[in-house]
Amino acid sequence: MKALVFHGPDNLALEDKPKPAIIQATDAIVRITMTTICGTDLHILKGDVPTVTDGRILGHEGVGIIDEIGDDVIGFHKGDKVLISLITSCGRCNFCKKAMYSHCLNGGWQLGNSIDGTQAEYVRIPFADNGLYLLPPDVDDEAAVMLSCILPTGLECGTLKGQVKPGDIVAIVGAGPVGLAALLTAQLYSPAEIVMIDLDDYRLEVARSFGATQVVNSSDGKAAERVMALTQAAGVDVAIEAVGLSATFEICQAIIAPGGHIANVGVHGKSVEFHLERLWASNITLTTRLVDADSTPMLLRMVQSGRLDAKKLISHRFELSEILKAYNIFGNAAKEHALKVVINNVSAIE
Ligand SMILES: NC(=O)c1ccc[n+]([C@@H]2O[C@H](COP(=O)([O-])OP(=O)(O)OC[C@H]3O[C@@H](n4cnc5c(N)ncnc54)[C@H](O)[C@@H]3O)[C@@H](O)[C@H]2O)c1
Ligand SMILES: [Zn+2]
Ligand SMILES: [Zn+2]
Image 1 (cartoon, rainbow, N blue to C red):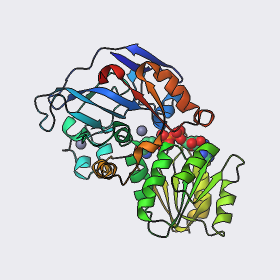
Image 2 (spheres, rainbow, N blue to C red):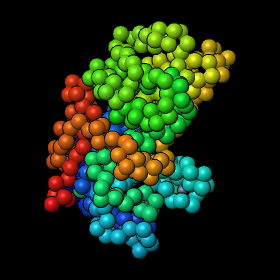
Image 3 (tube, rainbow, N blue to C red):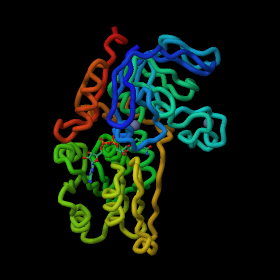
């Protein structure tokens, strides 16, 4: 089968790899019909995620059709159309019992990380009963594939960890797909203002059309001053970091109001400075979270009911044979006006 393989920083190749086979009786093999690229894949490409080693098939997002099931999979059948969650969970370990599926002792974020992922014609899904969702026929595949990672991430790590509540002033640093997912889900909790911060005017324009009340371009290094001016020096109740850089974490610390919540979402490859010398007296909370994807069933219902338009996060469409081009476009998002790029596997659809 064709698969996108990581060979170290800045080194990807579309290669022929053996089709995966069932290893455990709880596995399923899914024929991928659609996948996409995450900001985390770009971090992997930079070498920020050392658990990803040479030869790994990347990708943790996807929709597909069940091709094979292990003897112990009870909730699915061959031919079922499914959404793949990025998180693998056994359902039995202590972390699964606490609904911290991302820390499952027998799973967690494995796909496209410590086991082969979804940017391929087929993928093996361990604990298939927990990691797959049956796709209702009235849910569009393109909307569904936004629920593998980015919408649960924006909601769980950003909106919920940030405790967005009615009347809050929220700032989201990073208007990539994850920041935009935080923007879409924060609005479910009726904040008064959402200020979106990015370097890319196109993404900021999109953010405005998705409901941001203010946008700030941070390329001049003055984003924090601008946000403080917009809030009459009060700062923000919630600052969501959706980039993964020291500079953007600095912005969050500079704009957080006393009693506020900084919710870190970004994957950080380097250490950051934490200004306890200033924040020790500010009653703030700082949270981190690896997405657990426990919100996926709820998000699926919202997409199905038309309450959440997930498909509007997509800007480009490619075929699997063009995946290197898709990486190039997503990696040069500002120049290319790219948001989420989806990759269709035409041979799987036919
Ligand atoms: N915590 C989790 O479980 C989890 C899950 C998925 C993704 N992530 C992480 O979330 C982050 C965002 O993902 P994405 O897919 O949206 O990535 P992305 O790369 O598409 O978007 C990042 C955005 O940050 C902006 N940016 C870069 N430098 C900036 C700066 N100095 N000031 C303001 N904006 C700046 C870029 O212009 C871009 O729009 C990534 O770090 C990703 O790895 C975390
Ligand atoms: Zn992701
Ligand atoms: Zn577990």
